[in-house]
Image (cartoon, rainbow, N blue to C red; front, side):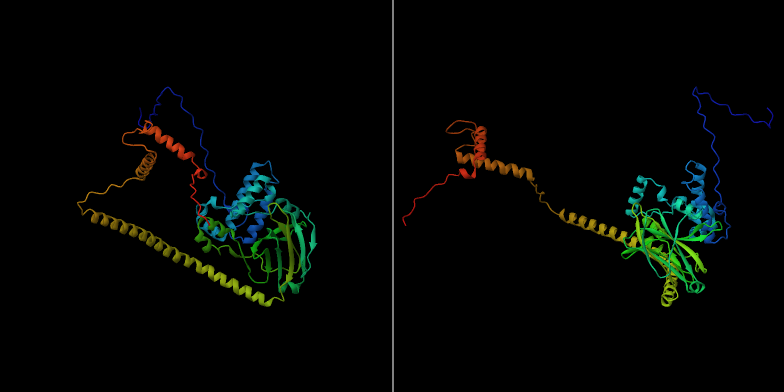
Length: 440
């Protein structure tokens, strides 16, 4: 055989049919998340959010019920947006790719309008138990708004409106501001006295005459109401996303405190241009409608409140920077405390064992035999025998011979008859002897 040729290994025929394994498919490579959303790597948060809204609306399961490819695209788009919408996860992905981001920790936003009754009940139950559940605006509402098929009511400045919106539905409002009012700033706030869940939405005008979702603020509980607000004051105003801290709290209670300000991020828009702007209130309850109050205000008269808000948010930013350093110090001290606590328990147990051993050694210095302790069962049996013996003496029986002097019966039968008579004897059968009465 020439040296260049290699002999093929012979197969051993064992008489059994060899199972043919199907060829393994090569693992699919993940697409770059920027490519999935169709945005450049240096895109802003607003560009990322706009691209996500359009793609999510395009591939939403409600519009593509029988298209599995559209369902996969919707999951991929949502997964990519969940990374890029979080500044920390985006930084980790830019540095190390998918290895730095765990896919199981990504949160999916649920569209309650697409869930059945049973799934909605389970989601409501988990929410009651404290499990953080993120919801999204119904695709039907977004599509109708994008196609311009929604009715929009005017919302005058400084005039609150009280209304009720059904679950997974929205009420749209238009707010018109002048150039002077735009310079002073605009505030739109919504609150619900019955603590219902809702979303405050802001829409931008599209070229086709429709409107697309640009900003979203979920309601939060404060005191006896739930509220949400958007502040366009001409300077960066921050919003607090509590989903990051709630997920951290489920894993580590201490992490909930240190992650509390991770969701403290600046809003995408800081001011509005003169003209007409569209807001909406979306009912986010699981089953019931939402009663709410909406109002739009010009911020010009609120000069003091502007300064206080800017000062408070500046302090929160400094606290967020301090928390990172404080967390490392806290973890170090906590580790030392845990070690000291474990050592304390071990030392206490060791000392108790030594003291017990010392007492046993002291007790071993004796020549007196150990005392035998009678069990409680033995005591009860001896007490029972003594009682029966006493009964026999009262009736004239003798336990030594085992016979009655008068009748000649065995002691066992006699004791049995005595016990039966005592059992039948009642308190009202006691023989009372009446003494002779003395004369008065």
